[in-house]
Image: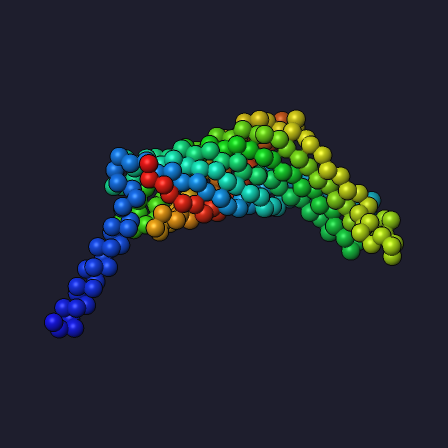
Length: 231
């Protein structure tokens, strides 16, 4: 057998193997359950707050903070081209406003713990293990917690107590200032290999999270790792 024929046989074998791996877990008419765990980066869009630094107060934009996301999705493969999925996740949405002053900083952090149900359409990207997805998120707020830290004027710091470096440190629950329900769009992509799935997703909130007049909505990125069980 010539080297050229060997190469052709090897190429065809790899192509068949890749095609089999791409579709063995997504046969039309089948359900696949994906437990997933990962990390979330989120913030409130267009949310400026006034932070006092000395005698002045500056308006500070929100920035991203990190949280946890975990849950499961059930996907139904309608055809070889795609399907639909429904999920239920616990995700830690939040936001952070930070201002530096006087060799220290003032930090205002907000954490919102949600139960989120993604309802997505899924699209296979050709004969590969890549998949695109898009749809809506329906979220219910479990609770909300806030934290305020001011280290611009250290107070109480001594040689025997070097940890007392916060002029103000406050933590509390403020669930009542937020709406219980939140809705938004979700767009993402995933790659699956031998039942292991890596999923990246961008969530675009449409609802006003606060009950007050200003209307910030949520923005978040999910990066999760999961495993598929064909049912």
